Image (cartoon, rainbow, N blue to C red):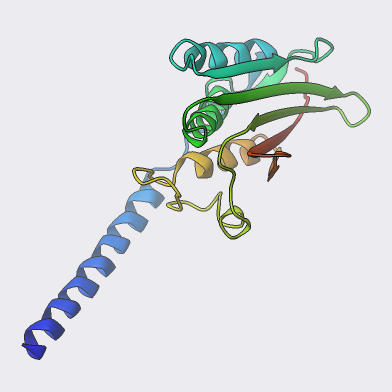
Amino acid sequence: NETIFDECTQMIIKSVDELKTLVNEFSSFARMPASHPTSNNINELINEAITLYDQAHRNILFTFKPDQSLPSFLFDRDQIKRVFINLLDNAVTAIADSGEISIESSYNKDLNIAVCTVADNGHGISAVDRDRLFEPYFSTKKSGTGLGLAIVNTIVADHNGFIRVKDNIPKGTKFIIELPVIFE
């Protein structure tokens, strides 16, 4: 009996190692596409992303406070839209029954930076998980791939931007994205 148990354990360990190798090879093969920045209005793009979720989740209040002084600037439209879709997707998941997701944009003229915040009043993220949030294949969702925030992080970094995560007081999570405002 003990021999069979040991053999099964070894087989499981070997299978897990083979899967890890396969996943690593696949992820190095599946790189993010190169970004193609064009002049876009990020407020319009955020509105589009919200529209995708607003109708489907009537139990959630979506609010958007756009900074109208934020000019159009260079970024890859599809990739930055993916950033907001992934963040909204996570926020919707974090809100079990009903809640609020608020998005804000602002323009720091002195530093020439667009700041976009996505905040929810969902279950929040533990301090332990927060450190691993942007790692590939790390997920707190049962059916999560752990790639959503890794993709967000890669896209923001490819745009020479930064993303931070904070607690949303009194409850929930807040993601802050800073992107350089570059003109043609």
